[in-house]
Length: 156
Ligand SMILES: [Cu+2]
Image (tube, rainbow, N blue to C red; front, side, top):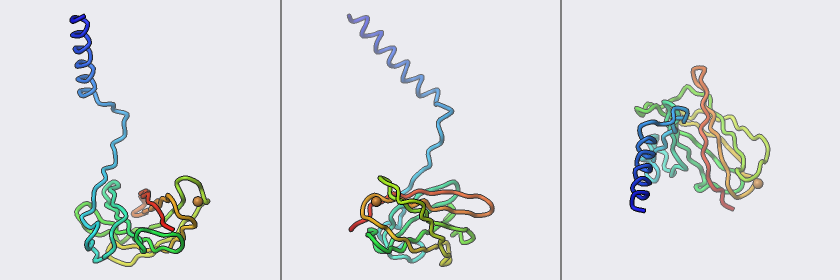
């Protein structure tokens, strides 16, 4: 009984050690998310709106804002602020918003977004229904494309 218990514990320890020393090389590196320092106060661009979220994608940091916030059914202005990791704004990108609900599809709905300047881009979107939505922010620059996904609730 005691021996079996000891063998069991030893096996468990070996297993966990093995897991720690041999990471799965096929596992993709997770995209680090970060909490923007700008979530409630002023963001680096002087935008007073609280951010819906901030994400890192490759060497880019992307914040998403909405007006109104939280977003509500109907017309909304979405704005992104894109910067390099060192905070330098990215103002030479082609940006688009691809919106849809996450619990049902309302079809393809892509908005071309205009550059406001200093890494800020803005576009109008229409949320047909309240509920869970996502926006995929398409960023094209220097022949490279990235898609940064944000999920949020849309109010009535
Ligand atoms: Cu819907």
